[in-house]
Image 1 (cartoon, rainbow, N blue to C red):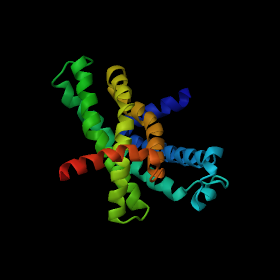
Image 2 (image 1 turned 60 degrees about the horizontal axis):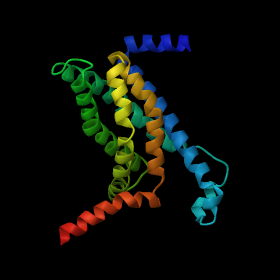
Image 3 (image 1 turned 180 degrees about the vertical axis):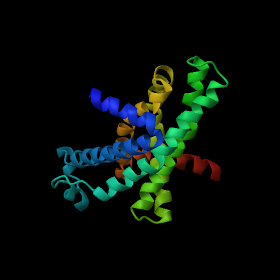
Image 4 (image 1 turned 90 degrees about the horizontal axis):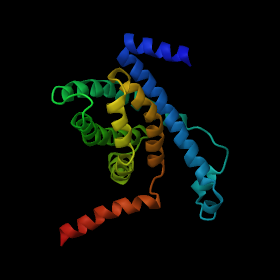
Length: 220
């Protein structure tokens, strides 16, 4: 592990962007495989077999990785999370450092707020859109998928990421903040992939019901 850590440090020092691009792609691919496994084995639970549809019965077969989907998710890590994430955290630190003393409450809170309200929603929006387009869905289908998945992912992720980023911005040196985030992106990519694979799950209706209520109010 020490050799691996030293090798990573050397790569990060000599080729920071390239290192983040490759590591992000690998971690997001691993996360998608994990999401597929969770979705597959959760569908095999005895309490869910009684109401299984023909599509669900296919999931009872031996688990097989959807490599096309892994490729789509991995390419998102390569193309967006790695390069954009690298420059985001670099310039975010420079921008906030000019305004607040490092490691103070305002310094950390400003970073967490910027990450949660700017980068987080953009990441979710692009992820669900990219996966939909990559799987060959129409523009209208992608729009419906984004409406269905965006709010649940944003709300559930908002319960976890602020705590993760508080520790990141307060205790982790800037040169290792991207590594720290990428490690959590392994779980995050698994979570987002799982959200997307849930389709029209009943628990998502709880979130979308708020949109219907607001629409009804606007029509009154």
